[in-house]
Amino acid sequence: MFDSVNASAIKERVACFVVWLGAAAILCVLMWIVFDILMKGASQLSINFLLNAPEDAGRSGGIGTIIVSTLMILAVTITAAVPLALASAIALSEDAKSGPGLSGFVRRSLDVLAAVPSIVFGLFGNAFFCITLGMGYSILSGGLTLACMALPILIRTTEQAIRAVPSEYRHAAAALGLSRSTALFRVILPSAMPGIGAGLVLGIGRALAETAALIFTAGYVTRMPESLSDSGRSLSVHIYDMAMNVPGGNSRAYATATVLVGLLLFINAAALATTRYAGNRGSSHVMSGAIR
Amino acid sequence: MIRTELLSVHYGALTAVRNASFYVIKGKIAAIVGPSGCGKSSFLSAINRMTDLTPAARITGQIFVDGTDVHSSHQDAAELRRSVGMIFQKPNPFPMSIRRNIQLALKEHGTRRRTDLDTTTERVLQDVGLWDEVKDRLDSSAMELSGGQQQRLCIARAIALQPQVLLMDEPCSALDPIASAKVESLIESLRGRYTIVIVTHNLAQARRIADQVSVFWVRDGAGEIIEQGPTMDVFSNASNHTAAAYLAGVKG
Image (cartoon, rainbow over all chains, first blue to last red; front, side):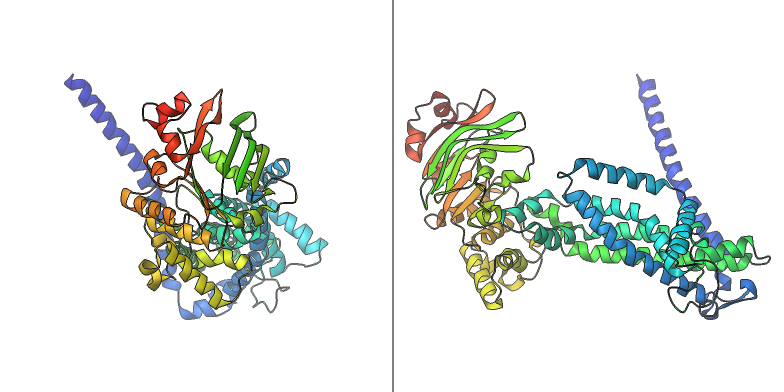
């Protein structure tokens, strides 16, 4: 009797230990990466590094022009991807009943697209944007290629955010005789904003991390870009180049990685803050209200 | 004011309501009672065509509101719902300010001037007894209100559109007894100004506020009206045995 109780208690403990071990291992990996980058990169950071153009193939100088190129590529990506993603997500979530065949096909295509390796996107971007549309190696080509890559994840998260809006709001809107577009733009999309923001962060994260697709489209010129049709090197491409192609570039690669990780953390924090703000204005109180 | 003739509501192969014929005159309160799953809510949502939102739902029979056939092809659903307001079981204010909750639909239906909007807002909040509680925080979120306050806000939002009819789907069942009593006395105060059809589980409530009562019951897999008439008659001598037993609390 006692033995069996003991045995089950031990089983419980072992299971608990294993589960926590897994969680701790994940945390360790993340900490290791961040510490490794910080240890080797933080000492190189300075205002000059952030502002100046690279010199001697990147061994000296800074990454100012590369930060500018990265932000420009990101801006193109967001400008192109967000309206498209919103429109498709609304179509998928609101009009599902009018054409289940079509929306099912669109969803399947998105899943396939999300699984396509980035190098394939790079080749497609090169063939389509650079050559067919004649944009050449440019920030525009790179940004648009990244938009194609980020679209599946943006559309899926946005669609889920819209679907997660309580159906009570739709009913309330319909019962007040509101048109579908008023219900959508004034009630449903504002309530879905936190989720849409989270999706945007994921999409931006994917775009910032991208290297392979950009080498073929945005190029790797380190000059300060003067317009969207100039070639420009992104942070991730710079890291790759410093680490793989430039002897003695390792420490610079680490310093650039520090900046990239910092940028990602900043975007995450900003998105979280915006989400909190939007949440406080409404949806987070949905549950508490009905019970009181 | 509202008349249905042999109204049936189907969901695919399922029949929720069968051959319901119902009548209520202007300004009266009609209660619909019956056990869960007997088609009360389906019946109610057929009246303002909320059933349109359920793709599988199909209506047969006829519904007249103020003499107009609700399901005729040239009746605009949005126009209909403007004159037939609906209150739901779970209070469902929009996640926005109290003011915007009331004014969103008003703006949609053509009220543009700021002063008109604010006058209406104050009037309807007075009507539901919420004005003194919220007048200093009209611009804070409606989600911060208590459940009872939210439900009264929803009623205010509905009557701001000056409907002729209010449909209420168990408006008190998600509320605590005190909030429930407040909403109930609010409904009573609306008698005469709006035609009200209220679905309720609470027989005592039906007895207190309704002018007439319809009892729904499941027969052969679908909800039917088995008894209806003036409240006192139905409660004291229902001709249908099942209904009499249900109303006496013996069954259901």
